[in-house]
Structure formats: structure tokens, C-alpha cells
Length: 251
Image (cartoon, rainbow, N blue to C red; front, side, top):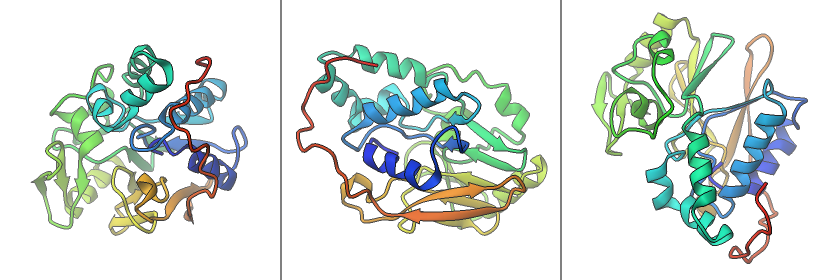
């Protein structure tokens, strides 16, 4: 979502409103866009109001270090005059789950796999309530990327790993998953099979950073686990031009 509030509203317009549809968000609600506060607020409020209908995963941007670099911290200071709201949000981020599964058949992390994690039971055993560390399995789940090359590789991001189609296939086979759905990378068409039939990237921030010109995508999954993709463009509504306004209160 990356702080693109009007595109988040467009997502709900296309996919359906809560509680008439179930939603699994793959993380990165904040940073880059103008409305990180509003995006995080709305997603958390929907989770509180419809806890069984909304699942919010943690992305690499739901961390103290990253949000101080890419906009969310500064936005909170600008809109509220102090870091208090940012501190409350980042405490909530510590509690977000690192991954999810759809009916035990579709594995959904924010980013990718880890050489430290062969089975989902190992993920369940992680102590997730902490700042995203610089290395280790929690870091890998929110930072790693699929690659065309086989095996594990060093990530050019400086965190996490790259993993090949053989790694995806092994992980899916061992854990009984049909395929992996992840986010974390800009793809121009909104979605892209990084590893055919094994790992797909979904990106739901159209015209990323208001200049990339990419489509966004939603994956729809029915009760029989049939899946399809809906692609869409950025919302024509960009909101007010004055992004320095200060809200009167915090919900």
C-alpha cells in the first residue's frame, strides 16, 4: 500500500468492502506515499472491527529503522507535532504476524523464504514481538526475494537472501503448499510469477511513488482455492495538495 490512501480505497472499491470479503494484506502499509498514517489507521481499524475478516502481515517497512528513512516517521512529526503517534504505531507493528496460509495450501510471507526455516512449525516457534533484526529468519521473511538462479544467494538489498525455483519447490512440497504468494517487489503488470506455478509476486500500489507508472494487482481466491488476478490503475483522486496539514485528533 505504501501510504497511497486513495489507491487503498480503490482496492476496496474493486475487491469489495469489509465485511463482505476477506482480506489478507502482505505488509508495507507505510512509507513512500503521502498518507501512511491514514493507510495504517484504516487497516488497523478494519482489523479491530472485523478481526476474522482482515489479516495484516508485517512487511520490512513496519519497523522503526526503515520508517525513519522512508517517510512515515517524518509524516507523523509533521501531522502530530511529536513522535508519540509513530511510537504507538511501531509498537503495534511488532505484534503483526510474519506470514499466513490460505487453507493450508497457499503460503503468504511479505517477502520470501529463509535458509533457517524448512517447515512452518519453525516459523510458529519464532518470537516475533520485536524490531525486525538485521539478520536471521525474521529478517529473511520480510526481506528475501525469488531469483532465477537456483539455490540461495546473497541479496543485493543487504538483508535477507535470494532463493531459486528449486528452493520454492522444495519448501512447498515439504509443507504441502500449492504455491507461495508474496509482495515486496515492484512488478510493472501488478503481478508476476517469479517461479512458474511455485511463487508469485503481488504488488498493490499502482503508480508507485506517484511516478513509476505500474499497474497494481489483487489476487482473488475462492472457496475451492481457484485463484485469479485483477489488475487496476491508480485512483484518479489524489487528495488534497497540502500535505502539511495537521489533523485535529488521532483516532
